[in-house]
Image (tube, rainbow, N blue to C red; front, side):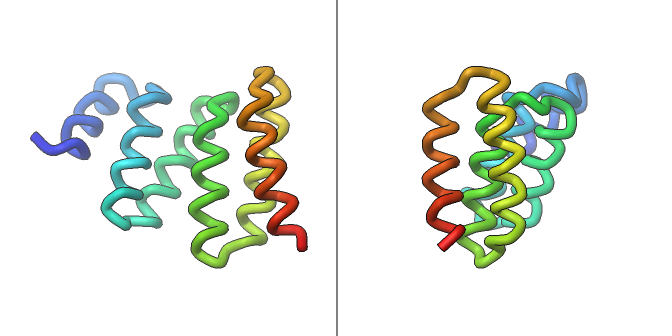
Length: 103
């Protein structure tokens, strides 16, 4: 069974499993399926608004694909989530990307 099938099976049993949903997004990203990856990151955020890595990867993916305005919006949301959860490392990385995109 491939990774996408395995993660999809997990999500059928537990649709709000943040780790599996994020992992599915990452697997789509590794296969250059950008829209599918972004959709999974968005679902992760929808069900788990404090799952900071989903904001971070979503913003990075958007930025790399010339969708800076969307990335900036996600980064602001991600920074708020990082502050809520005390994730200073991710906040620092997201702030650096935000600063880069703001120029």
